[in-house]
Image (cartoon, rainbow, N blue to C red; front, side, top):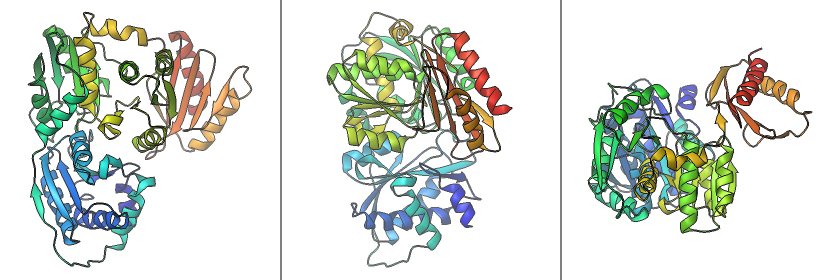
Length: 453
């Protein structure tokens, strides 16, 4: 049982197979443990709970709520929500939160994303380990009174807040295809787009946790094909693809080209620096070099982060950064309680397009300065030994610098690569970038040959 609990508690959230790992008994115990942790942290005594469209989510959320109220704390259920809508509720109400979702994972999974009041992250290094230990121990029930569960619909308040952060009042008419992947964007996008000067063409808006059309994971190119076809068919100005819980957004330009998330990071960074000159912006270490160049060209200060939302959110708080972008399609905004919001990133892209007479491809072209390999995974028996072998082969090269912020990063004059181990699998993840395709492929093939023997 101890090992099973360890498998469910990940670096940033709780996730596992429904019925065998994630059960109502487990979520009841986790509700108790989270309430106990919040008491220890002197957090407010009310928890906001949201849930995605998976068939198992309501029952698991019911059991969690029962665990929370058994310890005398209150619950506000906001019902169907995207993860960023739960973060909005946590920030707006100043309360800790729990979101029932397994994000882009297949239908047989579910899980919980937890946060403190003000949408502050709860990860392995910021409370999740304590909650895991409480679940193992079994939280002692010291019932003084049973907490109260109430309901509140926050969808319109959430949309109001988003539209208060990005001015879309004077954009030109746009035609936009939105692929919700049968996930939570099917719930939130209609409420947002009904307020915009846009014709929205919906793809897979039916809420269906079995994901009958394709996985709700737009970082995989195969899951963008239907969106790309629809953009060309409808002669749309832009395509948007959301993951299952709609906290990540990927964009497709008018030519149906999938846009690198680093390009969107650079675009939003430039827009935010116009509003807040001289500010700090976070980018993670597998983002394109172009991101830092754009930040500095626009008078900002760029800070490099390791991969993972809890690290970026902490760095944002410590540095008072206004924005953070991750290459995985997560975008974080100081004005959104430093939480990530796919919808807010999408609204920035729409605003940039709607304020300009240019196409999306023309707007993004200045940020496309390098060639990226994309993330390449290699199964290895000893990740540390493979990384040491790669480091040894580059360490004496002239003009090369090496750091270990997150795995191994090797920087050359017009190229770099990062090699980092997976948190959950026996994999090494390689990202390479260079000024030319030939140079990128040469570095990529050299490193892969070393890793794979």
